[in-house]
Image (cartoon, rainbow, N blue to C red):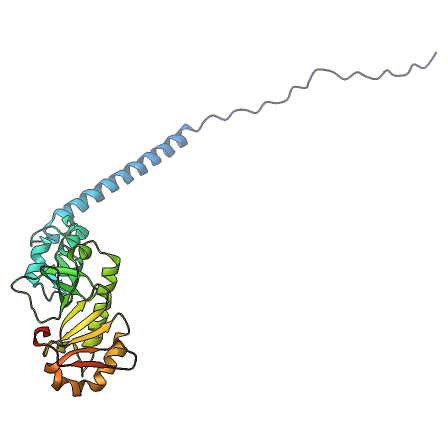
Length: 282
């Protein structure tokens, strides 16, 4: 008998049945609990916000924040009562109803006020703080106005205003109103000159009645005593007044017979004597 070779067994094309994974049922109870917690948290947050809002509204409407004290700082030209009237703040108003920036701007509309600030001091106080303008001279622009320490023309004089300031002349109202750059620069130079004179002893601001600006921009001083013209030029005022002070004690008794004093020549003081009487200013 012949040995027969074993024929290779054919692989079955039928895929073995694999056990299918069982689908787990949804845990509805857990999902419901989670949803419930989210709803409760959301509702609690909303209630907290609404409750807080209502509490704030009730607190703001309460008498706890009714203003009963108004303090004023910095007023000299304007009295405390005047500044309170400018603010329109009255006792009994709720502090949260006040627009502090608007009130500050309203106060600053007054000619004397340079800066104004309004603050709340909880629970019932308001503080008004102002920085007032400081007049250093009176400028003649057809009407008399105050000139402040910043070179700003800020107020037309009335019957109650003080007149014990030097007079500034030689300026045009329209150019001042339009804030012409050259005019503004000349006013700044005059303010610097006034500041320098205020610090001196021999020839001080008290001895000056007028500062005149010529069309060229040069400045002239007029002495309070006898109205003698002092030619100052356009610059180096401190050096020129230093020269004048060296001999001013000798010149002062002779002022009534002087025509002018010229300080525009380096290292010299030029004096003209025997002026006509019609040239005097007083």
